[in-house]
Image 1: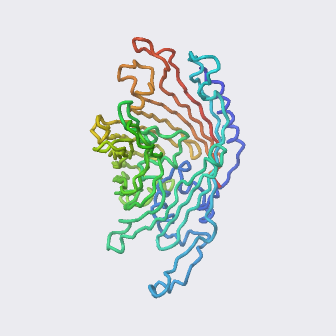
Image 2: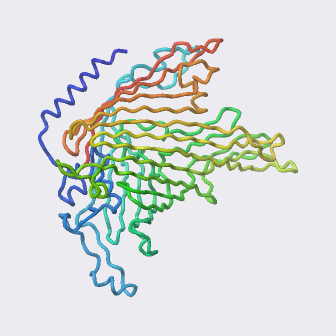
Image 3: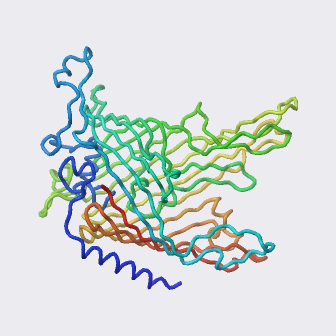
Length: 509
C-alpha cells in the first residue's frame, strides 16, 4: 500500500502550523506556580529532563531554594511556631496558593494499510455477521484528563489525574494515579537524606520507563502483554505491567544520579469474574483478586553520571558553555514482580458432593533495563520475562496437579534525538514472544514452527512542539505479517500487514 501521499500531506500540515505559530509559554499548574516554561522540567512533554526528575523526587518542589523561585507563595495552615508546640496542637502545613489544576487533551488521525476483510472472505452462510475490522482512515478523540499535583509542606506531595473521557466517551473515563507521597521520612530513623519515602494510593508501578506518561503515541508491547495459555492450560492472567495498582510503595535515592530503589505491596490485579454454580463437570470460573494475598514489586537502579567535571557530575544538572543541560549518563536497572492469579472451578469433594475448588497460580515477571544519554541523544531499552504456573484439575475433580507453565519474553529498544529544542525524532523496536502469539498466529510463518510465535514492530516517529504546551506527533508502525488461514502444510494463505500511520495533536493547560 503506497503511504507516501497521506504521510506527505500530514507533514506539510504540521510544518505549516509550526511556521505560523509564534513564541509562547506553557501554563500548566507548575508553570503558573513558578512563572516558568514547561521546558524547564520537560525535554518533550511529558518526558522529564534531569531537572524535572529532581523536581519530582523533591515532592514537586525545586530541589534547591524552592522559596526563592516560587512566584505564588503557598498558604500557611497554621503558624510556623506551632511546630514547636506539637503534639499539643495540629502540626502546621501548607496548601498551594493557587488551584493546582491542569487539563490535557489529544486528538488522533489514523491510516491503516489493510485488515482482514481485504484479504479473507469467510465461508459462512449468507447473512452471517462479520467481526469488526479496523477502518482504513479514522479521526478519533483521544483522552480528556484533569490532573492536580503539588506539595502540602513537610515533604508531603500529592497527585491525582482522572480521564474524564476516553475516545469521546464518558463511560471510558477512569482514575489514573491518585496518591500521597511522604518524602524523606528516613530522617525519623536517622537515615541519609532522601533514603526513604512512602507513597500510598493508586499509582503506576515504578517502571524503568513510564507508560502512563510516555511521549510515544503507541504503547510498549511488552508492558501491555497478558499471559494467556493454550487450550490445555488454565492460565488466563490478564495482568500487565502497564496496569495501575493500589497499595503502598517505599522508595529512596534519586532519578538524576546515584542509586534508586522502590518496593511496592499492592492488590492483585489479574482480572474479574464470577463463580459458576457447582456441578459434576469441571469448568473454569472467574478470575478475581484474593484479598488474603498481596503482590510485590521491586526495582533497583544505579545511574552513573559521566561528566568529567566532578562538581557538574554531582549536581542536579550538568553545566556547559551554553548553560545547564542533562548529564551524559548510563543508568542500569533491574525489576521483579511476584503475584498470583486466582481461578475457581466446579469440582467434587472426596465424598462426591459438589464443591468449589480454588487454584492460586503463582506468577512472576522480571527483567533488566538500561538508558544511555549523551546531550540530546537518548538510547534506552528493556527486557522482561514472564512465567505463570499452570494448575490443572486432577482426573477426579478433587484437586490440582501441576501443568506446563505459560511463558513470554520480549522488550523494546528506543532512541530519541532532540534535533532542535522543538523537534524530536524517535525510532523504536518492540519484540514479544509468547504462548498467546502462537495461538493467534501473530505472523505468517509456518503454523508448526517457532516462527509463528514472535511479534515484532518497528516504529519511527517525529514530534513537534508548536508551543511549549502544544505538540504535534506522527508515527508509522511496521507490523508483522498475519494470516487467518493456513494450507494443509501449515503455509500461510493471503498474509497481510496492518501497518498504521498515526498523527496526533495534544495540549496541556
